[in-house]
Length: 423
Image (cartoon, rainbow, N blue to C red; front, side, top):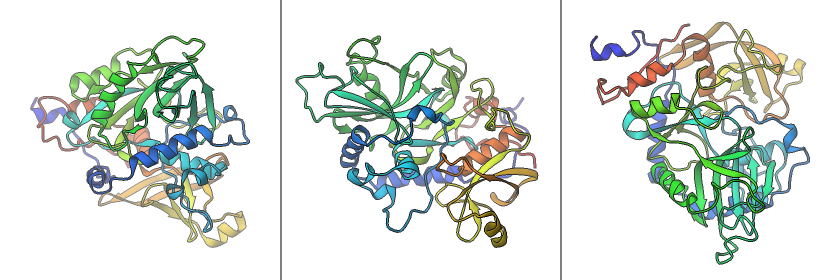
């Protein structure tokens, strides 16, 4: 068999500009270097001292990882969440608080095409199932917060300045911020990224350096130790692999001490970009996640794919992307009769007509209105999530496709491998 025959024999029409946006995102890193130190300081203070929401943080289950960025239009009297300082952000409640905190985490898009240079430029690792959160240690205490701003835990830890009895010689104002997933089964925080260490911001550092720093610095603390009086929860690292054939196979098949929920791919050159980014990707199949296709409120897979879109002033139904992708439009009379208004998040089923594409762009979606989305939800679906779910039902991007793209026999110019898309 010729080397190029290792790829899937059928190609789908282009349905995404994900690769182009990856390239633009890398360019913007060099052009727009934010004041990372100031941002990290503000984030640490907000995570520590934000007033807890009125709702019980344990009453709302953590949703599946959704790489949406909060893009709902804000009321005119309220500043954009990305422009808020720590004092303003600490006053946010409800949906606005969720929007602000979602922008602080780096949220992966769903992989709907295989990136260029996957072998050379990307890491892969198995994502732990659990609750995505920030963990910040400062001034003798440690706090973890979910991405909606709700406090998950306040506890002593072996992180720098994470407990009253530790690091007495260090600055009381020093702070550390980790990007973690709390794994309920073994009560462990699995650290997937480092935002700040002892007051030094790493958000403008490449993932390659952040992962090196994470491995070396965290090992210097007692964070990996079993729980104790001054270290209530254990921290652990996830095994990260270069995304060559051996590394990708290991991430997919090797046993880990946690329940897997898909694979995460990080571009080695990517900074810690707050919000939605194509430089981090999530991919799933039924062998590495029990949550490949979205389920309904009863935990059942519906017969038709469901999507959540945001209603705009002109009736357009859009995703949470920047810029948003328009999936359809509602008639003004229908909006009035149904009591719908701009900013509402609405749930639709994709009917038998499916999705239609022209020149790589969505042309038409056969949508059936189901009703308003859950009020606790703050975001519409992203385009990449809708497309991943659509592909999962029709012609999924399989592990064989990923392995073929990193095969040594494949031309290392590594053009994106396409998969068949069934209309």
